[in-house]
Length: 154
Image 1 (cartoon, rainbow, N blue to C red):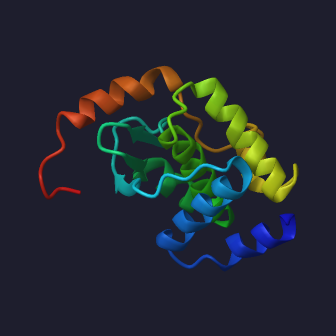
Image 2 (image 1 turned 60 degrees about the vertical axis):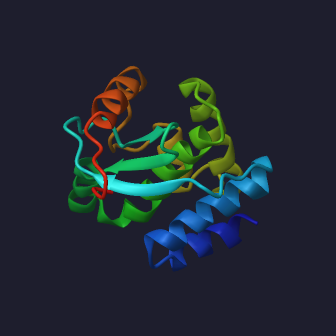
């Protein structure tokens, strides 16, 4: 199975395909799916926040600032970084709001899918030098940005 997911990740050509792969991987490993979650990209003012899940709108917002940094400094890791970020936030979308529990599940699912030496698993374990989320700030930022959502913006 590990080779299958690694090959699938290599073959991803769009964000839509990547989101489907994340959904399938969580469904296969945890038996849970959230078909209604949407993914959006936006520029947040804190580069330490890779993304956040907003439960009231059922959307994942990916911060484009760290994504640009990964693209610039570690372009070979862009798909892996996005998979890791989306996997983590998708697990939140299943109603798991504890950051510690979500991080553990992200690492477990990543290890099961790709093996312990794959970049996705290493990102989940904090072993690669990319941007790390600061959980205590996520809710504050989510609240602040939620107030600025405007109809048609997303």
